[in-house]
Image 1 (cartoon, rainbow, N blue to C red):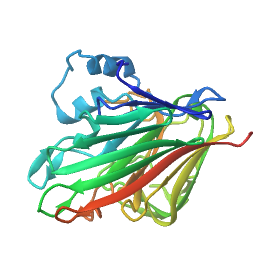
Image 2 (image 1 turned 120 degrees about the vertical axis):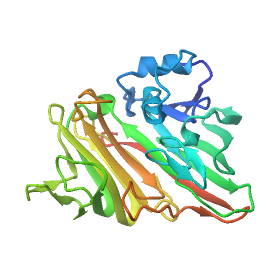
Image 3 (image 1 turned 90 degrees about the vertical axis):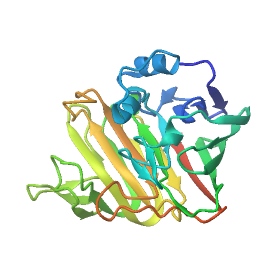
Image 4 (image 1 turned 180 degrees about the vertical axis):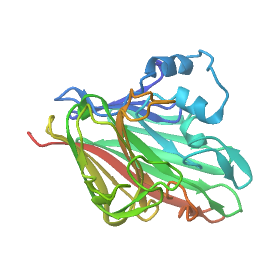
Length: 317
């Protein structure tokens, strides 16, 4: 790990942030349990070495992003997902904001302020990070620096893993619908199929309860999006640990949440069966498909504010 990371701390949480690459939140540790709830990629040491100056092995925009993926929590903007053209600019996998350095304005104790000005689109993101008990709250102001109207993606990508997922888990959410990603050949679901949460129909016509996350030894992949929320929140509870990670967010600008489960399923690049991760990702757009359209639009010189939070609730406290 590089030496220029920020450490935010209070009596409940310790948070490590790397403003030098994407303002990644690298760890979110519950202090009493001494448990980091965020996912750590199988090649974390290699990604840290590249961050410290070792040359990457590839210039491919997708594989290159993955090679430097340490796990944790990223901000995906102005693109979320595969490389695409945004207002005439070629933007790489998961967007510029997740790879470039952010400038730190202040950092002390349980609070930090930072910003980034994007190159692909004339957008400045001004961020405040603040610990509130056992919750990390992120407040972002997005500014259009130009006289041109913009439509961009914004997605927050906190991936859970490690010892937090050692046993069975339970997902709860305010969503009422799940749609399987149209461009992913899922072993479970017909691509693009819609399901009333939490019960989804498999390819075989069986019903699966998506609230229930099987323990280690099971192999499953789920990718798609949640929507039609009564309230914009979701949680993952570890039955074994007695801890619940709760994500809440601004539903006006982020009406969707991508749902990703990689439970030792992928036998080929990049996971090779080595990853057990769950992510619930507040987003301005669906994952893919003909109806994919971001609701995050900035008029000329316009600014918008949005927020999201990730907290750890201790059921045994």
